Image 1: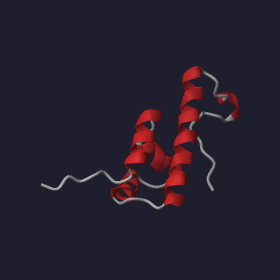
Image 2: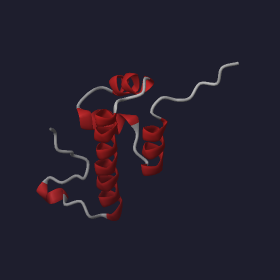
Image 3: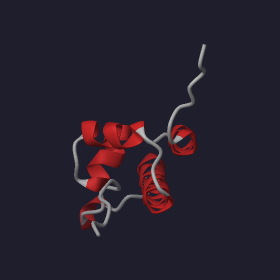
Image 4: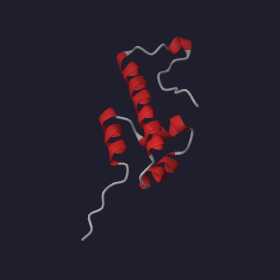
Length: 85
């Protein structure tokens, strides 16, 4: 029987380690969760992976700020907005 490996296993492992979900990646990319799911089905090229790794780091950092109470909600920093670009 053929043993298949999960595409983008390195990205998925980083997401799991950082506690980042698919919907958070989708939200940051301004696409629906199903779009991200479809992109993850096949191995991404290096620039696409790099973008996702950067998003994981930003989301994880923002989530940490919220958990530590460091987000400045009074200035519009809810901790979950990411720069679009």
